[in-house]
Length: 309
Figure 1 (spheres, rainbow, N blue to C red):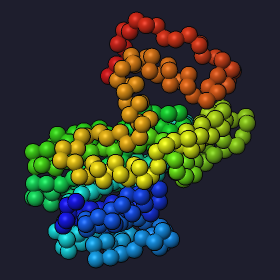
Figure 2 (figure 1 turned 135 degrees about the vertical axis):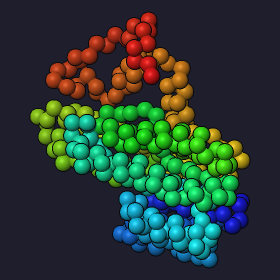
Figure 3 (figure 1 turned 60 degrees about the vertical axis):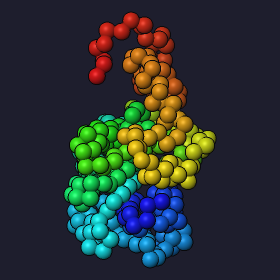
């Protein structure tokens, strides 16, 4: 443990955030547990309360005023934030065609812009101390994208790229940067996924062009989550272990499937990788205007490198 260190975690009232919050309250860290004002009663429901070293504060991560206020309080009372855990996030389930610009901005605002703004606020104090840790919850969705989750994956891919740059930038000051990448977790997280008006209509109307995408992908993801051996508590243990590691890696797969997908992505040729994942999609031959419209033949083994990045 690191007595005297101050931790700030966002989105701490549900799922993984709550599991991390509970684990933190059992340590010697000084902790700020935060969530939107409307979500704070959930702490009482789960018997999480303030103490000498635990403070519960309202924080809508999209509010510049609230972000600035909580970092200023930590600097005034506890010497600043030593460890930032960016956990708050939302997810839209919608194909690209069903996401408006306003909805896309909302997704990016919570999942990308807000954590980066919190990072910007805590970095001066960390640089002054020549120490600090930034841990951001990414996702398998930050290393691979799935249909109907484009906006969500875009936000996580953005986090991955920004944190990779940050890892290089702040290393000279001894600041550690890590992305924790959970895959499928046995939780009720799938129930909190949002639909846009267009995706909701398409899900319920048989004649809609993307109807099969939604009616197959939703239950498919739910089954994968319910069959997973990973839990919020097991991923929370990975987060705390990452906090305490002397030299934490930039990317930390937090579940077996996350590790498996990262290996698969590295060892397979890119075209074979995408072909394999496409064929694994649920009832994919029923998607689109006619069944089995996509060739079942595997991709050519010869690679021309045209899709490499």
